[in-house]
Every structure is written in C-alpha cells, then in structure tokens.
Length: 516
Image (cartoon, rainbow, N blue to C red; front, side):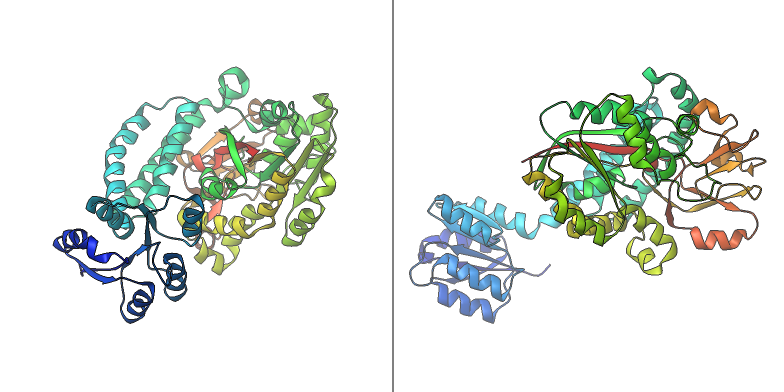
C-alpha cells in the first residue's frame, strides 16, 4: 500500500510538531502550510489523500480555503479543526461537505481515528461486516431449522434482507454467494411451510397471518380514527428490500411510526391481491358478491379496472362515512398532474393512491434488453427502484403530503422474485398464462415444484369450471409449457415474476409514517 499523503494547514503549525512526528512514525507523509494561500498552491501542485484545515487563520480563512479546495478537487476529504464551538461555524463547515470536524486542542489519537475513519473506512467496514455475517450465518442456519410460525418466518426474512443489503458494500463475492444460497434454502423451507399451513390459515383466521383481504379493515381503518388526514399509497410489486432501499429518502420528510409486514394472498398477483385489499374480500367472495367488478383469469379485459368501486363498497360495508378519493398513476404525466392538483384534495379524510412503476420495471425486464442489464440481480433491482423513487413525482407527492400534515401509509399488494429454474407444465387452451401460477383443468406438472390446490374454495379462490385447480410455483421456479419449452426457458430465465410462493412475494411491507 502506498504512503498516505496529508496536507496540514494551521497558522500555528509549529505547535503541532509532536502530532506530526506521531503520524510520521505511523508511516503517514505530512506536508504543512501556515496560511490558506500557500495551502491552495500546494493543493494544486500535489495529489493529497486528505487535508487537515484550521478554521481560524489570518488572510484567507479556513472556510474560504475549504470552499476553494472543494471547487478544485471535490472528492478529497477535508477535516476541519477549530477552537470555536459556535453553531454557525459548524453548520457552515458541515454544509460545505467536510469529512470530519475536530475541536482544539486535539490529541494524536483523535487525529489517527479521523484518518482511519475517512481513509480506511471502507476496508474496516467490509472486514467487520464479513466477520459479523460469518457469525450470523451459523445462527440463521440453526434458526431456519426451528422456524415454525409465520411470525418467525417474517423475522428470518428480514434478517436475510438486512445481511443482503449489508454485504452489498463488501468485495467478498464468496460471502454474497453464501448468503444467496442461504436465501434459496430459506425459500425451499418457506414453500413447504406455506403448503402445510395455507388451507388451515384460511379456515382459522385467529391463528393466521394478516392477509390482503383483511389489511384495510385491520390496519388502515384504525389510522383513520385520529384527526389527521391519510394518504394511503399502494406501490405495486414493492418488496421489503426495495422499501428499505428508499426508506432514508422518505425519512427526510416523514418519521416511521409503525413498520410491519403482512402476507399477500395466493396467487401473489395484482388481480387477486390488490383487488382483495380494496374490496376487503377474498377472490371467491368478490366473484359471488360483486360479480360486476370481478374477472377471472380467462375473462376478456382488464382485471384491475374496478379498484375504486371495490373500495367504495368496502367503506359502505364498514359504515365509514368519510370523504375520500382514489387515483391510479401509471405514467410520468399522471404523476406530475397529481402533484399539481394535490392541494385541491385537502378536504379528503382518505386519499388512496396506486402507483404502478415498480411493477412496470419487473415486466420491462422480461421484454427489454436494457432493463435486463440494469436490473440483472436483486442488488441492481433495488438500486434501480431507489433511483426511480428519488427522481419520481411520488417523492414530490410525499413532500406535498408532509406540508399538508397528512399521515402517510406505504404498502404494496405483493412482491416479486427473480426466476431462474424452469419447470414443465401442460394445460389446455383455457389455462392461465402467468408463469408463477396456473389455474385450469387437467393440469400436468412436477409435484415437487408446486403447491397444488384441488379445491380452490377452501382457500377463497374461484373456479373457472367445476374441475379447475390451482398450482403455485415455489422457490425461484417458473412454469413453462412443454411445447416450445426451450424458447420459454431462454426468454423468461432470470426475469422477475410474481404469483407464486416465496419470501419475496408473500412477506411484504406495511408502513405508517407521521410528518416531520
């Protein structure tokens, strides 16, 4: 490793000789200057790794020197040293993006700590993260064997996501691959768990996780009982890890009051899960009670055209006589229009907003080579979601809601999983087309790859005909027709799909936030 070069600027530099000798013994190379102008000349001539800069100097002040240095070479970390603890000076220095802030008198160990924090930070964090995950790996593996409740699975999934996001920042690809295999194993066990319990849950609500059709009644309605108006945002296809990726952006405007999870119903598909949220009914109940709004897989036309009507019916059923409006945003133009009109909605107790962008990314990955490149894995998919959110009208909507004093609820209808393993399936012409689930009669499939439901009514699902069944793909499997199998495999492998059983699709976020 090459020697670290430090520029130290202080009008009393001679008094710092002991500090300089201390650092030189640690193999740091120190160049000194006793005024701002000399420092700027040296800064231009040489490539320093870091700068120590006194705030209070005659002539060009420390803050002025800092400003010019940042203009010249913005990436070099600058540590401000000052005698003053005035808040204004601190704010100005921090606003100028200093790397650290030290108060005189400083001791050599403080200096050394600041150097390590700013120059060795990535390496130290990487080493600590690697060591911590290696310890946690064994614990997760043991806990996975003992996980036997839906609460335990939720916690285990969140731990896996935590470590997945922590390991994003390290160079050890082996550890990343170990975690990926651990996630795969978790999904295999989770698939078995759901298969064993899903029918029981539907007939024993008190002993079941919170499902899509109970979400509004049990979680949203209680938030409508205080004096704040509520902005209820359903971001289609938002996974828990994607929420964590842009949580910090939301936290600039809102503070989290409750961070919870719930389970998407099967199929984990928009037509079933999102309609269930807004209607407060299972798909079977929707078909029976509100047939004018429900469409089965094989029916012509859009399957989510009546969400507003479903919501109206649920509010009537719950006897909630409140002023409310529903909106769905599927493009940039509609998003901008909503931002412009937001102030006119302030009389509404509840504003419900469906935002469709994340789902569009996952579908575009199947069809567009450029998106396949941009969202090649979960890390890239999170990054793409974060970038979209940061620059979308949605963050402007959230800002407007904060200014208006709205309580904010962010949730989703289901998640998605990167599908890598094909599984052969045969069905007739009326079989549904989704790659993570199929419904129809006379289905032939690989038993080990799916959870099959012979009697859909037992889990709140309608039947297209008397002998219809459902199959749900588990783990990272996608269902490909045996006819033209190779084409299906090459086209759909490594694409994001939903409708089946996985931690990513089923365990999804429900967040309540209050304005800052």
